[in-house]
Image (cartoon, rainbow over all chains, first blue to last red; front, side):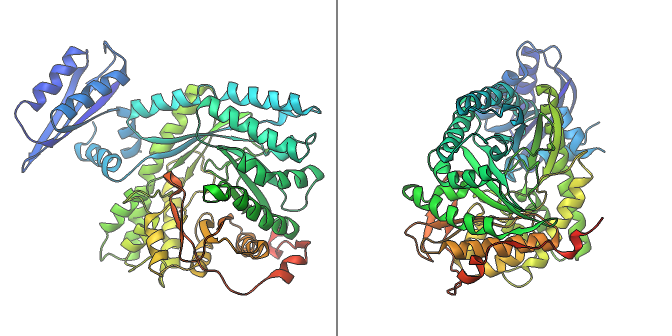
Amino acid sequence: MNAVITVTGKDSMGIIAKVSTKCFEYGANIVDVSQSVMREYFAMMMLVEIDALTIGFGDFVDVLKKLGEDNGLTIHTMHEDIFNSMHRI
Amino acid sequence: MLNFSDILETVNMIDREHLDVRTVTMGISLLDCASDSPDKLYTRVYDKITSCAKELVPTVNAIEKEYGIPIIHKRVSVTPVSLIGGCLDCDGYVRLAETLDRAAHSVGINFIGGFSALVQKGMTRTERVMLDAIPQALASTQLVCSSVNVGSTKSGINMDAVMIMGEKIKQAAYLTRDDSSIGCAKLVVFANVPEDNPFMAGAFHGVGEAECCINVGVSGPGVVAQAVKGCKGRDFSYLAETIKKTAFKITRMGQLVAAEASQRLGVDFGIVDLSLAPTPAVGDSVADILEAMGLERCGTHGTTAALALLNDAVKKGGSMASSHVGGLSGAFIPVSEDRGMIEAVETGALTIEKLEAMTSVCSVGLDMIAVPGSTSAKTISAIIADEAAIGVINGKTTAVRIIPAYGKEAGDSVEFGGLLGRAPVMKLSAFGSDEFIERGGRIPAPIHSLRN
């Protein structure tokens, strides 16, 4: 099962490092990453495989949400299917 | 591979445009609970609801977390109680409502619908008793919603029931006078009522339905308003196409949630209701959409055309996105629950007459409208009759949820709080309709009901 992590907010150093460290810590395998910075606005999307998560998916969502709050970023972690159903026929 | 901009679009809809699944409503049949003993009936009803809906709230909460979509309400609708309450007197029906209320509290839902009767053609003895119990039932419970169907295209309008409902609405307003007459906010009078509607206060589980099923109501006026704002200066074809595409995306999300919830709970997937249901939050308003189309204020000339376009485009887009579409499916135009509508009334742009015209093209009817507390029962019945006529003749659902706010006059305002919002008290015609309502009997079904 895959999940999509989106990170948006003001750009600063080490955002990807912080998010990927958490992924490693809790057993989420990064499959794909794309990111861009427009002016000072940072936006990243990370596709992660979550079959080997060491905590429940709900808890993982909360861990990343908290990480976002601590760093002035908005982090959403959502099941991949929501995007597939909305944007693909 | 997923597209970066699609993902940001979805996240943006949720974060900034109030995209949500408005309600996951479990329909439960109570037909097998009927009994000749009131106590046995109460026990069976309580046990059935609490066992069927035991996992509803935790399961839906888990889906909400996993998919990252806010799911606002978890609710239950049951078989119209007038069908199972043959052994009850008026007090007995009030006890039954209290039983529903206890069951609703116990499973953690925020409304239960089905304190209902279908009397579009005639009333049985027990249905007559049940109608009498409605005001007290609403006053002595918190979470119970009531609805009564008084007309249909097939059978015409039961004007006896229309007259009774005018009185019941007045009584409900009086009994809950210390609480802004909130009883009336939980009572809807319908024509052509759908039997699988997931939205309160009109939800119930129809007799043709399965034992237990999941119906989902999607929402998203904020998302549609944002999309419409992006169409500035473009023609109507482009506008309709944009709304269709947006409605498709919103509905796909509802379909996913409905399929997932029904599978996890092991019950039938009923329908997805494609409705634009506003909330009092800024940016979550149907009036905003109409104004974004180029109207200076909702309620001005052109509003009915704008609403007709919106309602039709939502259905067209949404119907392609779900395997089963049902319920009310269209744009809701409640006054108190929509900040833009409240402002339109307060600035004098929107009157009750214009609202009535709008109900001929929206999905429901006169919804959450406060009127002066001195309004007579007969006048309320006449308002119901007008709405029912629009529904019956045009083959659509119409409804009246009206609050004759005790002690209030036109120009005052009534605060309900939460999603029910704040209703400005609207001015009605100064002329009576008493003799018309007192005739009683039935308005015959229209000629186009003869379709066989």
